Image (cartoon, rainbow, N blue to C red):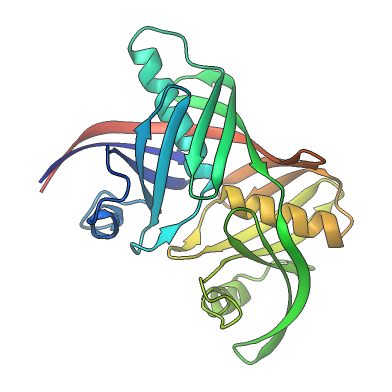
Length: 267
């Protein structure tokens, strides 16, 4: 098997990109598990199959375990970076705006700054849905959570301070809790100021991740709705800080994406 691949990351949340005419190809889950494996594959949090269009691209995302996911904010931004990189490699100016079709709808990405191989992008992520507070019994604890969708399912635990051991214990249990038949992404979030939230992320189908675009959006919404954070805030994960705005037009996620490499994978 020989594949032409690319890799990009946003604050350590990394993805492999494979251009394919058939986004529903039957081997998608198997390819994701094989390519994303950190020791015997390429290594990544997810595989994105994509097909270019006149306005950008359409994509399908598989998590590292081969399970499908509706959208990734960082994955969308990484794809925008890849398209801009390829455009520049052909000697033409990078597009200012790209429309990326996902299983959670079209995400419009504005390229604010290009310092190849880095690209600063602002993505329109849509309005959150199903926002509510509830208490779940998990791993022997009663845990107050905020649940919502930002294109994919999210569960946010608002904490006074982050506790690594608690995150490691409750993250996988919440991901697979009966309240979430599709599984869920989990964020542990601590407010550090009126415009700053620090998070630890346990991603559905992946586990611990250094960053997550939709996770940053979900943590921001939870903190803005229930913890007094302003509607324009910095969300800090282990991989770095992203910017989230929430207004009448929806959620907007701003941050960098870095091209890592393009190459040929042979097995």
